Image 1 (cartoon, one colour):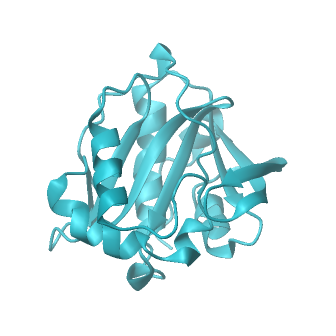
Image 2: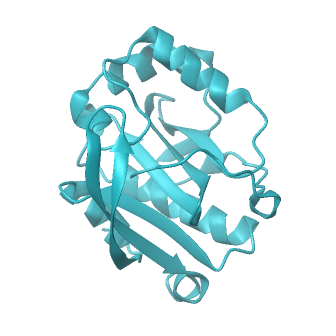
Length: 196
């Protein structure tokens, strides 16, 4: 996942950001109780280097700033805490961001939870939200060219390769990314998501 630019505040992309419940996850607004787990999971250089706006090192101060940023009124997009439905445990973050290209999907999952399919499950929920809650015709996503796991999530969601670009990452500097798009017509054809 790559979120490259701050929000451009396009009112047509305003989403009420409902709580999303999937088979194993609850995507809800981040809150102060998430700060310790957020700081612990995000303090991982391997995660920060895959994202544009996550600093490294990452601690309580950065977690507090992130939570505060999510509370500010947003004209477009959503930011979610990704939590395990059974336990309520915070395991990562995901959202929809208004970028210069349009609405863009973004996500990260803490390393102890990698390989569990949580990123794909959260991404499916957000793709559905993006197309149901807005009139967008195309949803965007990007990943670093070295991020095979994120690329697999992107493919499982039905996105198609759209080219390469560059990303300015706080933790990794200027790095190449692959860009992908999913159009509304394709999404309608994929609404029954594969389970694997």
